[in-house]
Length: 450
Image (cartoon, rainbow, N blue to C red; front, side, top):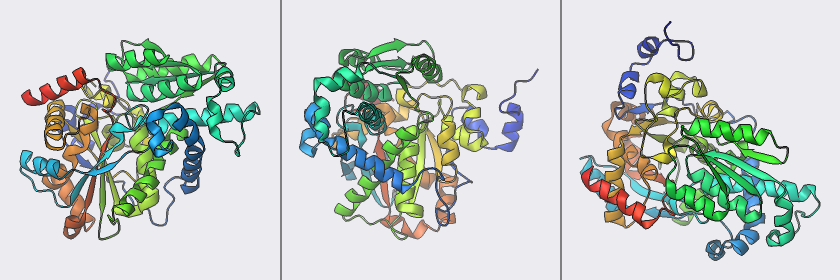
């Protein structure tokens, strides 16, 4: 009997989706989402909106005195977890030379790779969810109120309280780091289920911080499911669901309001004549999804969000293309989901993110591992910025926007061709700040032979 993928044979899917064969052959592709719609006259999400983003921002502000107390690296910014937005003109030139393609507009790097505490974009959503859980528990026990100075959470009595509760998560690495470090600091028992893709140094660091690491000889999906099942057995356990959590989603979404302020401070306009293009590395979709939700809420149709995935892990691409989201996986299409971009090594996308944002994601492109290493090395040489392979996945986005036929059609259909000299391109760097030097040196060396 022929195996069916969401009710169709693979041949039926190929006939329906002409570009599918190239994806199955793990070739680089640039795909534009035909379901993209204007933000005007519609709610991006009927269940959450700008008020929820502002509520999340206020919660982070309440916790800032606590974070500044227990994490000295946040003290300079008074406990605010935020990253720089930096112009990268030398890398802009390098990309143009590498791919023999001029890129109109200006290139910036959003350095979530160097967010304090856990050194990745996951510091936004992951840390926010744990803080929200801690606040709810402290409220429930009458030990905290909205008018308190939250630095009191550093007292031992709170650690004793939280030690009665556990936090569980499944991760390829960076989400586990943010959850593990924050949970252990507060006093929670924390268990991180890690997939086979997770790097050893991330497991070691988690154990040093006091987390229990459970290793699985399987991919991300199996690690998540194991974590979910474990958490369900304990009423005092909270499972951080990277695939479906609206709390994580809102933690990521706060980035948009902060980016808006950074752009204003740098006098970089975003409007109909000054389009903003954002390129987001994508694994299961939680972080890029939350950020996209925030960006579209703040900037509307003036922002264009493209996701970057490894050619061997095109989970979100397949979910959006087929309109089946989490009902399909890369493995079902014969794609192995094996990539050095460990943070993006996901075979099945989040159904929540795909469905919530199928009208807001501009498109998805894929990139080969050897290209990631080349870009990683060029960025280090040109700008002195070191990222992990996953974090540079977005860098070919501005190039593909120009060289691919779908990219050109996107610019033409959205009447953007004459506005590109005024465009701002933001490459969202998602991780690398905590990578040990010897591991980073290996990444850099691979860039020389790629």
